[in-house]
Image 1 (tube, rainbow, N blue to C red):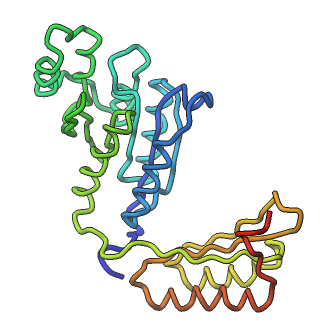
Image 2 (image 1 turned 135 degrees about the vertical axis):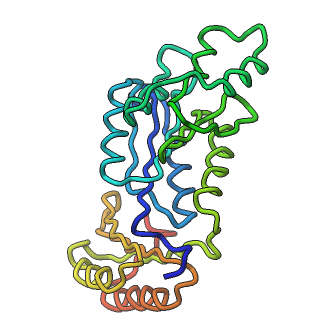
Length: 258
């Protein structure tokens, strides 16, 4: 296994904070982007959570994720200066550290806001003790502490900041990304399952899924195999699996089938 493959010891987790997301008032597009970005780095997330603006809820999940070996933990949202921005305190409490005034962050925010540096905005400089700042040219910095990396919820801030953090965590970029091959068959998932399960056991570096359709008038099931582009052995096995299934079951034309 090359250095750029998914490491069994690496268990990333994604947390998105916000009542507006949890209540279904706003789509969780940040989570979609964060998960896809980790996948592109060949470090797929092992957990993804949406949490409310509540200190103790955030803290309890941080504790649980850390105890179960999740690292890194990427958190977005709840870093502003209003009463419902609870991520700083939640992360600190979950890690068992105090919030402390981060003087460098305070000076940076003071310079940025000038006369508008209200007590509410000053809260953004109270961060988990011993954390390091994540630069944010567009607003308040994020922070990193003990494997937890916290970002603002604005996509224009989150995305470049998380990319910069990932470049440090995984300094060797993947020389190749992921390949995805799939086929959709006119068969029930239970009929396809034995062959797919055998393939999955024999090919642990591949990520294979079975996705039955519930929207078509006739039964149809998609088999999707994901593997590293530079893994020729798995590529051959995956294509052989799909070819064998297509010989046994009729293929559904997904472009014309409604």
